[in-house]
Amino acid sequence: LNSILVSRAYGPTVEGEAVVSEEGFSPRYDLDRWTGVITKPGHKLEGTSIVDKICFFPTAKGGIAAGWAFYDIKWKKIAPKAFIFGVTNPVMVQGAVFAGIPITEGWSPHPREAVKTGDWVRVDPARKLIEVLKRKAG
Amino acid sequence: MLLTSEEQAILGGGRGEAARRALQFQIEVGKFWGAERFVPVTNVHMMGDIEVMGDAGLAWLKEEAGSGARCVVGTTTNARCMDFAHCERMGQDAGEAVKEKEIIATLRRMDVVTTDTCINYQTVYQPHLGEHVAWGDTGTVIYANSVFGARSNFEAGPAALAAALTGRTPEYGFHLPEHRRGSFTVELKAKLDDLADWGAVGKLVGESHQNYYAVPVFHGFHRTPGADELKHLGAALASYGSMGMFHFVGVTPEAPSIEVAMGGASAFERLSIADSDIEKALNSFKLGDGDARLVVFSGPQQSLFEMKTLSSLFMDKKVKPGSTCIVTTNSAILKQSRDLGYAKVLEDAGVTILEGVCFYILQNLSPMREKNRWTNMVSNSAKIVNIIGAHRFNTILRRTADCVEIACSGVLR
Image 1 (spheres, one colour):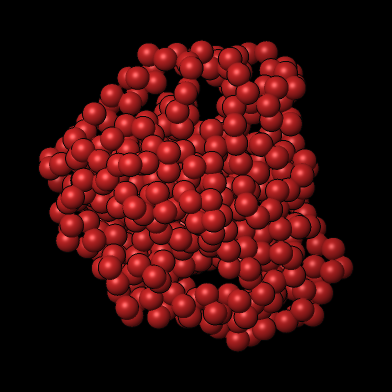
Image 2 (tube, chains in turn cyan, orange):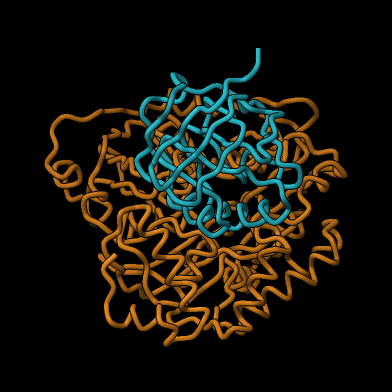
């Protein structure tokens, strides 16, 4: 199965179900921080839960408050297992490190060529590697 | 990362457990970005309120204070989520207000100066060219980097607080000259007579170039922009584009010319923005279901001159019964606005002035929206129009005078 190399990474190795987004992400602008569901009207993942998922986002959007938001959603047990960004910003990284959530930036190849929503993937920050372990059934 | 003997001492617990944990956290962040060392900072601005921190953040903060966490450089707070004088009327939770007061008390124990403002750069602290600071709230950071030529990354609450405790921050991003060069140019052919127009520029440039390290270089504008105009431009660039810096040729200190701002590069993207682009951007915001009963002047908080403008626009007018108009500013500006009579004009017109808060981070905002049956939010701030989406508002950007008309007529123009 496919694998993706990332440029920068933090955190322990985790496995989980992939959610692949074509649109960027902010936990403040897009996410309902009580359910873990993306609620921003018109977001390409509107209605999708990111709880316990490995989330692939091409970009990070705005938002200093993400730093607290990740810790908050982790404590509420509605955090994703990892954030995989094409391009991210310092707030996302600070927030993820503070909350102990694995985070990576930069990818090759692009996830759209390697992984689909529903696939089971492993994120190994130490090796800067994401592997697709199992395709989504059907 | 290369650590000085002082940093090694902090890591060894020489300055207490809170400082040790803070430095360890900063090292992890620095390693992610490939930082080779730390740089000392002179000033910290942090976001910390119950709406963003939640119970988990509050518990963590109390533990920090209990373990001896104390700021070693001047540290101020960003806008918060409650104005205690208004929270009952606004339908905010009394229990959360108690927690918000606990946060404020805890921060003060840690020597944080609780200014509760997102316009610290207009009212509290103006860093000089090349000064390293650790600021949070994206609008403050982009203003520091661009207009002052100071150096800061976006520092989230925990990261800013870590910098306050250790007096330093990892050297990456906008602390390094290579990230401060322009990436592309934007010729401003538009007139840009209103703050909403500047926000629209930020939307047009930011939305199409979403990247923290993209640095637009503006040029060709027909006059010198004012501080409030640059504030709305920066806030919108940071919000729509996640950008941390821009140059403005002949205006900002690191941009005496396009060539210098671009760091000598010759091949780059060249954009231009005309009046028609601004009109198109404004017209793209439509009234959704429902009505235009909520008008907000916030995000960033209003400066004294914005308060003055609003007071002249609201003079002898009344907010339409059933409509709500909210203005937010900080305590210093509000005091001056009261002394100068601006606040009275606004309050006589039926405007609610909230102190020390920003509208989009108000505690309980989604239930507040439902209770008031607000579906649309009208504002002259492109930033707030962009960021309030998760609370399920349909948002509409309009020019300042139009916003006032909408507040007084209830009719969208």
